Length: 167
Image 1: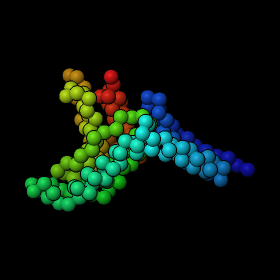
Image 2: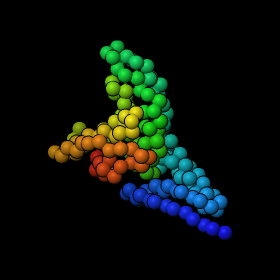
Image 3: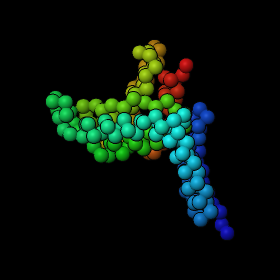
Image 4: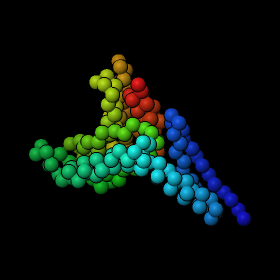
């Protein structure tokens, strides 16, 4: 019997995100059970975005904003690809991470916003090409840039979420 399992793990503030490239039947079974457990945790009100209705909020924004010129000023529609990437982004957030408010921009991108005070805020816009454009204000400091999204939240963005939401 062969047993091979790869776990590149990323740790953010006590939460663990695990991906697997399981190759044996046993390792695929373990990977499947781990994913099921993680899905249950993420569906809880305490730890996950599903329990906090963030997925519903994302869906409503998508449905309301998928028509061109929805605002009467030439707004672009939110593309299916943008919605799918935004859903993956939410799913990739580690357990117990503060959930963002969700909005849509006139250019068709979906936006995730973390707001603590006017001086502590972060906005992440998700493009249909998989780019995460972010801007943060933390006290007198500003941070902004673009990161690619490949299914995991970039470290720069996770660090900003934690800094904005810190008590």
